[in-house]
Length: 124
Image 1 (cartoon, helix red, strand yellow):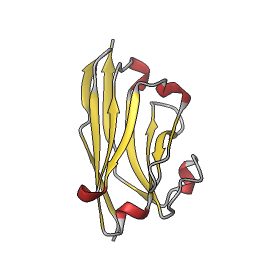
Image 2 (cartoon, helix red, strand yellow; image 1 turned 120 degrees about the horizontal axis):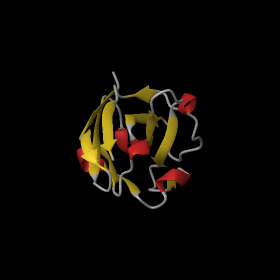
Image 3 (cartoon, helix red, strand yellow; image 1 turned 135 degrees about the horizontal axis):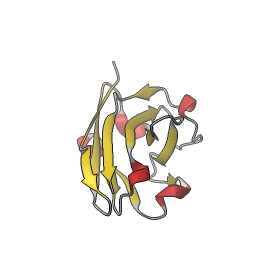
Image 4 (cartoon, one colour; image 1 turned 90 degrees about the vertical axis):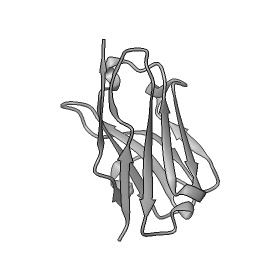
């Protein structure tokens, strides 16, 4: 059974930082494409960033160099460092996995496994 568990969310003021973590279990984590997605209030779920087995990364335009995705295969953990947070970054953040080496899609439907999500709230 594949499990993804997020942590590190919370409330922060605009300009602040948070680091999200996602611990994976139940499969060969290191050989999967991993991604972070988010869903803002009253909006569709959207990609934030993805990282493949070989370390290739893709970022949504709105991250604008503020966010960094990384992975530690030894710890089976995915990270998202978020700096210079803005109120529009508020939402539920989800960790997701796709059983391919290189990430080939940015569409949520392309990812097979999902965490429960964690809330990020940025106040102005």
